[in-house]
Length: 141
Ligand SMILES: [Zn+2]
Image (cartoon, rainbow, N blue to C red; front, top):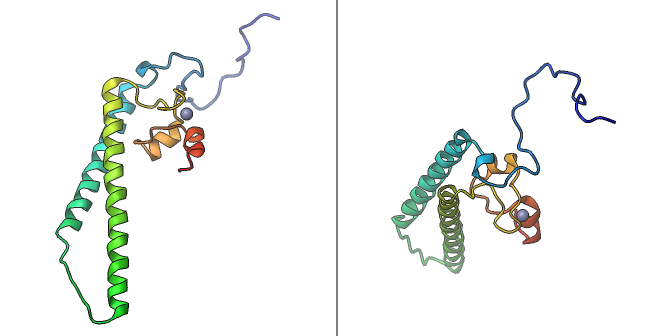
């Protein structure tokens, strides 16, 4: 049976252009507009993470040795702050790496398997370095 003419019915709503599954896995598959949006989202995230890190740096040091419980909750708060700081620092590194991938022309491709990362995932997490499958395999989000 001849190929062509399979797409008979015109859809009423214009469908946004989709990446071809087997199209070249290069920057050409992602238009400049989307890259620009990703870049500004990344820069925004970077700025807010840096602001968070800066804000925590000059948080007043309030040592209250009133009781064991107060000391314990102080330690707990410090550990939580440390965890938050580490998360923010990691995020900044991820964002920087993603900005580097934009420059290198590999943005949107999984760093592990090389497949394109799903659009929805990139919209939500523009700094994502891995596709959802590889991310699951490494035990993260
Ligand atoms: Zn992957």
